[in-house]
Length: 466
Image (cartoon, rainbow, N blue to C red; front, side, top):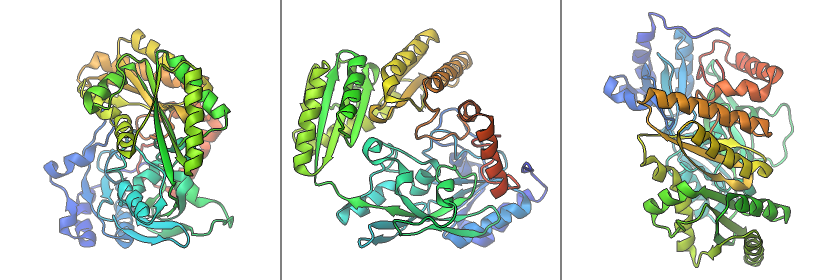
């Protein structure tokens, strides 16, 4: 695979791009493009060559043909909420921001599908479905600002992942522009379709390295008739983990099964004032949804299991307002912790549920060993942990300790049968850990696919692998 190189014609690319998207849709001034040089990932940034805002697929295609002609790397961007450096540009890159391609194009209640442009905000997709009495389950923590194209490119997860799965489970089709500017339509509204390779899934989670997703066809579900939210409090993390294992073993799959550790509880309560118990080592936030009778039965079983495993209290939300307050408390964990230090590194590792308590304890030992401040929260129901390192990127010595801690955490996650990322993606931040997870043959296959679809290496170069 050839590496993209800057040529003397590179400086003309922005000028040429104005002929495609219009002068008002091209940014080149340093003060204008600085915000597009980083995403939600701490301590990673690089100023791009220029930023373009296409209005439709035809313009995306033309921009890619232009970039290929001048051998200029292209990085696709939505709202820039990614947490693995996936939308951080390389030097001399052209950022293609899809924020203006943000329409919900169709809501088909007969086929339970929704068609949206890649720049549509996830919350707006949820709201459009909800208004029609339907349900779009994926709910990444950034859903109020993140775009559906970015969700698909990163295969985003969320709090409801235990019961409903991740973004991949709701993508029925997409429109994608390849590196040479050609436009492909992948998938359709058919529930069953096994014609040829499943190319649609190839692009889900590809982080913009194989093509630019411009439209997404999503599967919707009937809206659950009822919900019940519970908050279980524990003096020991192991008891919380045992509760989770027993709930699943009892063939109960809650909509959400979240946890916060002691440090996160205190920060969130100070921030959100949701009535969380400050003396707890762990809390579980559990939500059951579905038919009202089934929800009532599940909630009763969950409460019984929690008390059996030593929950010091089990609180049921009295109404939808209290349920929303508890859910907001969990969703505010990152914001609450981010107030403590100048730099907040939100990590992402997933392990088998049987290893959860061990992994939380291991993270605590890593924090002690490297003299770091680490809080942990996440999706206990699906084994997805978010060790959150509170640091200061200006402190070189501390950042070296952070890197050593991250290496230990990911090594241990792999040792117990886990993965280096459950929902944030690989990007720049985790690519050095990927070979250890995949092994030589699988890693080579990944690179061969990239080489086949992007032989010039122009699409989001340096992400996932060098």
